[in-house]
Every structure is written in structure tokens, then in C-alpha cells.
Image 1 (tube, rainbow, N blue to C red):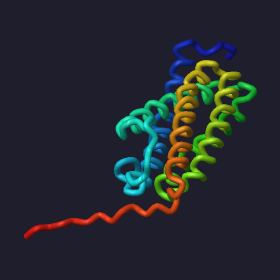
Image 2: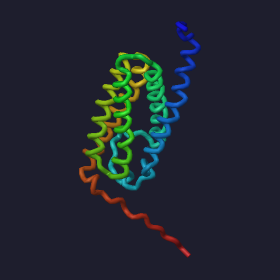
Image 3: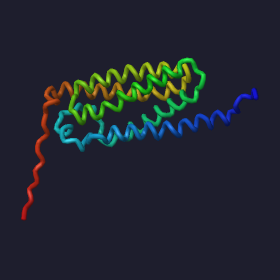
Image 4: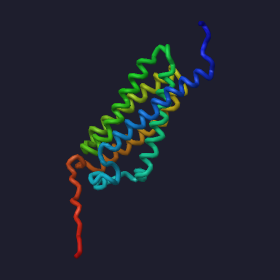
Amino acid sequence: MTELASKQQLRMSLFRWAIVTVPAILLLGLLAGSSVPAGADNAWYRELAKPAATPPDWVFPVAWTLLYVMMALALAMILHARGARLRGAAIGLFVAQLIANLAWNPLFFGAHKVTAALVVIVVMFLLALATTLAFGRIRPAAAWLMVPYLAWICFAGALTWQIRQLNPNAETLVPSAVSTQIML
């Protein structure tokens, strides 16, 4: 049989990849994001001086959900590109940048390692940039889906840098104890 797949068959194949990648990436992001209290739920973070550009807490889960969906769709496009010369390297780069991404939240909010989190963001950006360039050689649309993620990493890096500058003692900061005054 020497027939090529129809456009509908190709779309269904991409859809099958997306049905796996989108929930998987969202689940991994959710697990990393909920592994430690973050934002206003984190007493240590509440004590930090934050840059004026820090968005409200509700922005972060919305932004990350959208970014993870776009990243997963980009990955699905690359997984669907069977036979592409750089496909294996592109997938490897994606996995490496995703590992760096998932490590950031526990490192920053859990371990309070602001400087180490800044290093991770730089590594994450470089890996995500390499991923985007590799994706672009295979499927340009997949690369374009990664661009908002690159922009967000730059923004998050700038916020992390400013938090580090505003809080030179952040790694040793101990949140104030919560006290309750109960009147009988």
C-alpha cells in the first residue's frame, strides 16, 4: 500500500498526540505548582518586598495554564512530525527545559533559594530558546507557540532578579509567626 495519509487522518494523528500532551503537561505543572505553597499562600513570600511590576496572584495560574497548553500543543506538533531530522533532539530539549521549569517553583517557594532559582530561570530560558529554534526547523507553528513562554520566562526572570535585589537576606528570612488572639 503506497497511499499517503489523508489530511483528515493527519489531523486526527495530531489530535491524538495533543490529547496526551496537553493533560500530561498540565498535570506536571499542577503537581510542581502545588508541591509547595506559592504566592499569597506562602508566608515567606508574603514577607518579601516585591517589585512594582508583580502581577496580582490570580494572574500566575491563568498565565501558566495558557502557557502549558501552548507548550503541549507545540510538543504534539513535533511528536506528530515523524521522520523529521531534528525531532529527537527537539523532544530532548523540550524535556530538559520542562524539568528546569518544574524545578523552579519548589526551589523558589519551598527552599527559598532565590539566587538558585534565578540561575534555573536562566538555564530554563536558554533551553526553551534552543527548543523553540529546534521546533522552528521542524514545524514553524510549534516554534510560534513557544514564543509567549519565552516572553513569560523573561518576565519571571526580571521579577526574580528584582526580588533578589530588594531582599538580599531573602534566603534567611523567617516569616513572622502567626498568632491568634481568642477572646473568651
